[in-house]
Structures are given as structure tokens and as C-alpha cells.
Image (tube, rainbow, N blue to C red; front, side):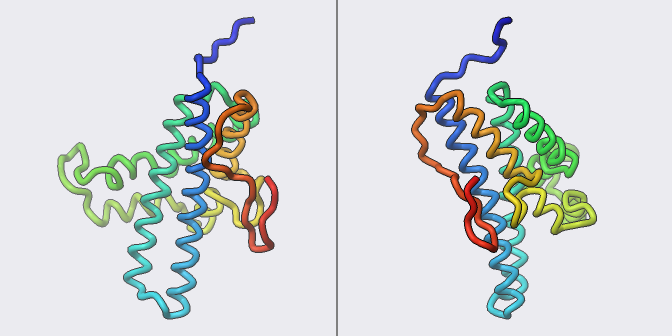
Amino acid sequence: MTDDRPSVNQEEAELAINLLAQLVGDIEAALFTLDDALTRTQQGTMFQMMFQQVMRMCLSWLILVSTKASELWEGFGTLAGDEAKGKMKAALKEANRRGMTALRHKAIAHVYEEKPRRPMRPEDLEAMVKEMFGKDMLGFFHWLRHPSDPKADTMSHALRLFREDILRQFPGVRITMPISTYSTPQGDVAF
């Protein structure tokens, strides 16, 4: 049996491992920032308009993370084991179903829609964001990272599994972006 995996050298594997850790950290940072901003808004120490700006910034970042995850998958997905492969494919399919790639292309990374060549109207953007959330905004955030279950089927979990598979194949890589714990309301848990 021949191995049809593309040749990946140690340097490329190191880059992928550290980028995957960065993506997990980006998901966590965006969600923690949103949680903090919501708490401060509810406490009256942050104005509603500022919360809206923080929300927009964090959602933009989360949308970019899903696109970056897709690009990393395209480049290194053949290094994933069966479990990570299934979880990553499901996470990327869900991101696409939620319209995250379309949002990135139409509103987050560009000013103009390609067709028609004009800036996206606020009502069109709002409709796309509502589609991304579905009927459950909290469920969307829990799909990205569950607050208390590090092994739930989330984008964060899929990225972690993918990273672990590459680490197993390249054990000598230099890790500049470690992710070894999962913060929960009950404290950090090993993962």
C-alpha cells in the first residue's frame, strides 16, 4: 500500500501546529471578550453602542478563524487521523452551512460585493448574520467552543484533534503556541 499523503516537512508541520493553536486561542479570546463585554454592558459599565462594536469585531474575527481553519485543512488535512478528519469535516461543513465563508468574502474581508459591485447593505449583512446564528445565538457560540465541555463537538475541539494528529507525526517540532488546558467556569482541565 502506498502512502498518498503529500510530503510535509518538519518546518511546514511546525507552522501548521502553531497556526492551529493560534486559531483555538483566537476562538477562546473572541468568546471571552464577548462574555466580558456583555457582563460589563449588563452591569452598566459599558455603553450598548460599544458592546455592539465589540460584538461586530469578535464576530468578524470568528468568521476569519473559520476561513483560516478551512485553508489549513486544505493544506494539511491529509495528516489528520480518522477522528480528527470526521470532526474537522463536520466543523467546516457547519461553518459553510452557516454562511461564514460567504460572510467573510462579502462583508468581513472586503468592502464591495463582487456582484453587484457595491458595498453590502446593512439589512443584507444583518440577514446573513442571522443565518449564521440560526435560531440560537448561544448555540452558535457553543458550537465554536463549549464553555464547560472540552470534548463537545465544536470547532475548537476539531482543531485541537487535528493539531494532535500532526504533533504525533512530527513529535520534534518546536511549539511556540501551546494549548494544554481548557478553561471552564470550574477551572482549567487538562486536554
